[in-house]
Image (cartoon, rainbow, N blue to C red; front, side, top):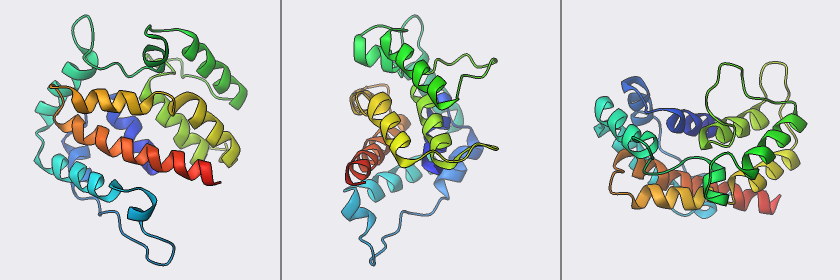
Length: 196
């Protein structure tokens, strides 16, 4: 849930200096030899986390704001689109957005009135996963089956292609490290849900 919260924040907006410092000083992903290490479960995940930590230590907050805007906001058209509809249909506000809204309604969730972000934005989807895993306020965590269904239907079909586009973009510097971490983290999620 904490990683989903972090990813939701990183894709909602550029990290400020405080968040960069928090990531930079976060502990490395340890290896638990009793149950199999993180390296066994997701090859490259600890290294990707270390690379993100190092990038966060080196990155200037103003530079990452500029990078975020160039990559994901753009003038007229963004370099990389963070919406499921774009990746699954080639257009914004298409059937995947309608499907996410229907799923959220079925889960008793909805976009807050003041929010401007569409529900099929990667940040919003990560925040939904966080809520499904950890609960929120009086809402209890959702059963694993609901978490798996949401992930498999609304995130897994497109997130890897999106992260590859970020990694391959000449504009990406800090977000290349974010995308590399996300690819490995989402692979761990996919594989974990397949085992359950």
